[in-house]
Image 1: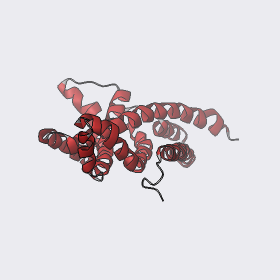
Image 2: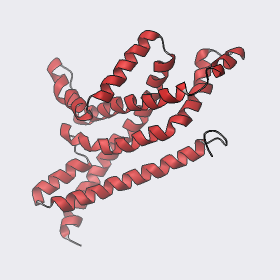
Image 3: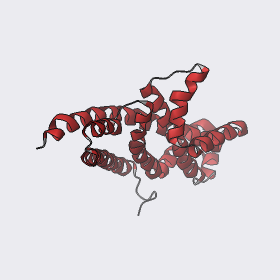
Image 4: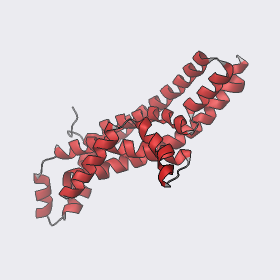
Length: 220
């Protein structure tokens, strides 16, 4: 095999893969958790809280992620707030992912009949208990395909981390390509890395969907 691959490209991309994984896993977890919380408050929270989170969702869905990362890493230091490159990237991914996930959760919550809350109240459950144990689990199952799709997007979003000097897969590929001028080879291989990550994530998400599936609940 060409030494370019074995001695330069593959070792560099493996380093980038580690960083990409460190970006994706916490961003996906906290992005999903944030989406559940924000989506729930947008439906069942007090009016001022609903307006606040609706505004948050509109902003983070409307502003490009690249701009958000620039603000977090390059803009906030102007007002005395400093983040390391990795921290800025993860915060940006979480905030953006939470906004999108909240929309999937909100839609799923609205699809659940309000009579279930009334039935839970009749059984002596508080509104919070009903939401935690009855409404949100159902909504999560309904929203899982959409939230899973957002996780797939997040894998590809992670390629933007290099713009705030957090060198992951794409950043390593750019560095190697700039040194060797072998752009086609470098980015073809990095595309295979991303395809592998997406394939693994897709497989795991299907397993989770199957695990959480309830016979007769949204299935044929």
